[in-house]
Structures are given as structure tokens and as C-alpha cells.
Length: 419
Length: 163
Image 1 (cartoon, rainbow over the protein chains, first blue to last red):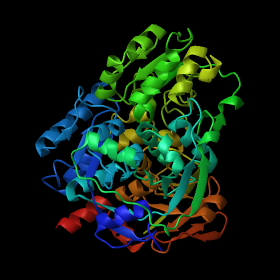
Image 2 (image 1 turned 60 degrees about the vertical axis):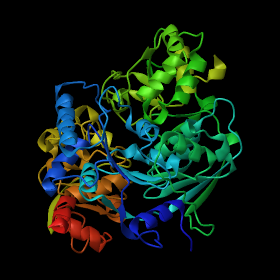
Image 3 (image 1 turned 90 degrees about the vertical axis):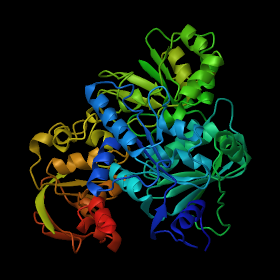
């Protein structure tokens, strides 16, 4: 029996010729990531381990992005603690306000992850880098600490589900609609403990930004990782962003999959996930009148340049509804500058939207757009759990940047075609 | 190792945002986190949980964020063990790594009711429902994970390796 893409990468990094699903292995790490919430705990654990240095000063990235620019004194203390640790250890990739961005948009952009890598991050959306054909997965702070000390992590080799993408997506349909459609189909634990491998002819219609969005939400189906077959677009992206050597791993023809789904992208409609689980999806034509109070466009899921362009395309020459606050958050400084240079900010500001500095902010109810009791938001983020964006009696509807922007104008959940 | 306690029971897909809301993540102090454990799901949890109580839940317990603050908050609240039909994988890893005992046992998770008196034997994986007079068996951990658990978590395990 052959190996899946994920199994091949793991076998390689464990120094084994072959691995099988269920096998426990120790793998060599190419990158260990943490943010301002998870790294303080990791630093405490690192100290308990008794290590006096990190395994490789170039292979650790610390990105204070969740509560930054520091929202309160406690958050500032946490960032101060990890900043001092990074300095003391000589960690090269510590990204301060001014350089930082939302971690999972930042790392690929900085060329810190390439095809064939094994990455762990103390953030559940670390699975994003699967878009680059890397194995990357979210872990907790203790795993991050152990990874920083030893350069290794233990894994149970996952089984895999295969998603064969076919056809060309329709107008306005993006990676967000595709992944919400898939999660609606398989459920929030549909890929529990497994890899989601994306392949098929339809890949050629998906930009790298679409792929980052799809891989990013693999965790929302419970997956260990999401991973895309590497093609010319991946190679082009990696070469443009990184000097590092990359390696392409392809699944064997006889690799075993627990499930194979064929997804016809031409049939995927604009999709919205209703409260309070990402699996509660409805297509745009099934949604009645749902009035909203806030729109958030940004995050590690949808804060990249194409997302900004999509929002601008919808908002151009239009006005945000008087009952709605529309908050747009480019995910990194580079996306920010690019959006500014392309004139997108003029469109946003003329429409009555606010543009924020990069931060995870409202996505996890941190700051920069918290919801009050009973309020509803359409958000391009990844989770609509109870209380995720603020008051436990607020509601989040997950959607693409196009639907979010259209909803901001309409004052209710809306398709861009309805404006 | 054995534990015995009264059961507090929840349903499917209990996510880490309700286990410990992000608004409290500007600290990692276990006692402070415990004061807000389960707050957005069950406001009564903190006042009614007693040391040694056992948490029982349905499918996909601990889904969502990778915050280790979630198992830390549960452990610090006094919960001695979590039994669920299934666990989300990062929560599973984190619980093992910080030394919060967890058991995956669909039969027990479905059959045990709120308020039942339950005891757990971690070496055999046998869960005894004293109230209902029933027994269930959870699959034992692989040897490698038992070593981590025996070392009190991943830090203890790595320390041993580096020594």
C-alpha cells in the first residue's frame, strides 16, 4: 500500500522509508510557531524543561498578533515576556508591531514555509501552510516548548480523506465558499484526526489565496492537517517568496484514503455558516432576511490581498448601510501597503468602512470590534462559536469577503448580485 | 491511578472558546483561568464543581482553538478526568501533555448521566458507574503516551530524555 502526501512528508522527516496510518513517530521540525497567547505558556514550559537554548534560532517564529497592538496591560505584559525570551534566545523571526501580521498570512509571505516542510504551531490554524504542500498542524504550548527545545515533535501518522476538485468556480465563488461547502457536507468532526488532501483538475482555478483559505479551515472539520497537491502556482509562489530549498511530495497512486469526495466547483454556491458551528451552512439563496450590526473582513482566513480586492470590488461606489459597522483588517503590513497602493483604501473609506492595522483582534473576541448582547456579525473569519466575537448572546455568520462586503451595504446578509 | 467523583455532563462539540473564552487569555494563571471555566456554556459550573468531579461529554470535545489554557482551566477547576465520545485532536494532545487525564469511551459517554457517581481506573481503562451499577472499558493509551502520562506530562518526559 502506498503513502499519502502527508505520510510521505512525515516518513521523510522521521528518517523512515515508510510509515502507516496509526504509527507513532518522531519527526524533525522545519518551523515552530507561536503567538502572543500561546507563547507565554510555552516559555514557562521551556524553562521547566531546563533547556538553555533553542534548537535553531532560524526555525522558530514568534508572532504577537492576537491582542496586539497590546489591548491592555496584561496583554502588554505577555508580549513583553515573550519579546525578552526571543531576545535572550536570539530568535531571528520575532515580528514586532510594524513588521508583524496575522501569523498564517505572514509566514508564507516571509518565505518561512515551503513545500515539503513539517511545521508545528501553537495556534490551531497552523494548518494553513498545507496550501504550500507542507505538513503543518496546530499544537499546544507544551508541544511548542518541546519543539523549541528539541527540534522534534511526536505524531500519530494520520489517515487521509481525499477531495478531488473538478470544474471552474462560478462568479464570486472563492476558497471560502468551497471550504464552507465541504465542512457543511462532512461536519465539524468529519475529518477528525485525519488529513484532508486536495487534488484534481479544479486546482488550476484556485489561486494561492483561495488555497490558503481552504487549508486554513481544515481544522474546522477537525482535521489534523489540510494539504494541497503542489502545482506550478505553488512553485511560483514559493520561488517568489523564499530562497529556501523546497521539496515536492506526491501521493502514491495506491495510497489509501478513508473517503474520497468529488467536489464540482462549478456547483458550489456562495455559502454562509450560521451560528454557532461552521457546519451550519446555507447557500445564499436559502437565507431569508437576516439583519446585521457588524461586518469584519480580515483574519488568517481572509485577510490577504485578493480578499481586499474582492471587498473593494463590491464596495466601490457604494455605501455601508447606516446600521452597520464595517471593519476591514488587512492581514499583514505587505497586504496593507499593497491595498493602499492599489487605491483600495479610498474605496473602503469612501464607502464608510474602517481600516485597521493588522491584528487577529475581533476574530477571537479580543479587541477592535467586539459584539454586544444580541448583535449579529457577518465575518470572513473561521469560527462562529458561542461568544467567539464578544457577548455570549451575539451571533456570527461566516462568509466570504464578497458576501461580507455585500452584507455591509445591504444591512442584511446578501449576495453581491443582489445589490 | 484511580479517581472517583460526581459527573458533570455536557453535549457534543464543546469548543475551547466556551471552555475558556478568549477575553480571559491575557493571563495564563491556572487559578484565574479556572474562575471562568465553562462560563459561556454553563454559568453554574464554577460554583458547583467540586474537587475530583468527572466531566463527561459527547463528540468532538475541545474543538477549536489550540489554547492549552482550556485543559489547564479544567484541571485547575478540580476536574479529575474527562470522558468523551471523541476529543478534538489538539485538545487531546494538550490534555496528555499537561497531565489532565482523559478517556475516549463512546459507550460510557452516552450512558453516564449528570450527577452519577463514577470511578475510573487508568491502568485498566475500566470506568465504573457506581450509581447505575455498570462498567465500561476505554481503549488503553499506546505505550508511548503512557510514558508521557507517567512522567506527569510532556515536560517531564522530555526532561528525562535530555537528562
